[in-house]
Image 1 (cartoon, one colour):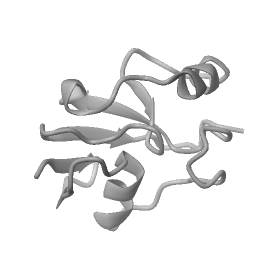
Image 2: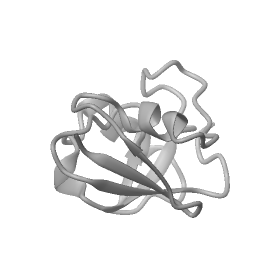
Image 3: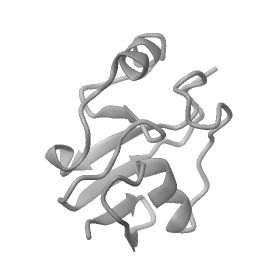
Image 4: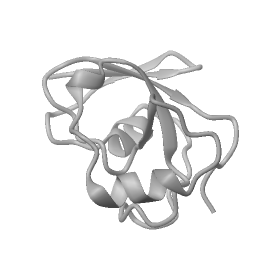
Length: 101
């Protein structure tokens, strides 16, 4: 099972393939905004994937559209509610602000 490391705290959690990064971040005891119940509508779960981008699913159209509307997006940006774990360890960074609206 892949291990998700959440920065800046360094918390780690082992999760089953198919879990979302949002589920992993919460399972690691970290606080992250998620107002839309995982529908890619709010953008509050915007994170950076620092390592292991091949270990998560590709961007879907709903996630891509929401990321296009968020300030501060980079090539490392993902919505934690939409990124599904595959079979590789992943390191993510929680942002110090709620970037969605």
